[in-house]
Image (cartoon, rainbow, N blue to C red; front, side, top):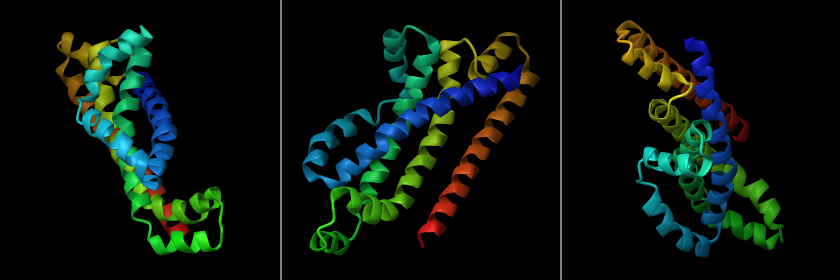
Length: 198
């Protein structure tokens, strides 16, 4: 039924999004912290970021030879850019005075990241995460329409082929509600963390 298909889609989003966070957030820190890494990676990011996430789907299918990991790979690709860019921007906006004090106190890089950078960068990071989850939920529906198998996108396409318009309307409504719930969960999380830091 539709419930099972939504869970299936959410599972793909969770995996792709989770891996994107594991890769994207540390990468954002590195780009923001080290100017040479920023110079090296920014041209690459500028070229790859505007590419439609669905353009990556055939590569996913070619590499993984299956629809499920190919959809997850597409989510990973579309989720990673906001996380990298927002985290890097947050790191670059940390006042230089903080870093100078850290240098005077001879703090290790680990302590600089955990005590100074992380609390300052967190609001930017959470903005990146929020943008990513919205994009991920948009993209999974389209990816599943193309790959088939299971998931809300596939279910929607299947109902269209069976000309069940009322089911399509219900599915669209549910997709909207799930997207809204994901967005609000992350907003609540962002608020909780921002209060924790003030």
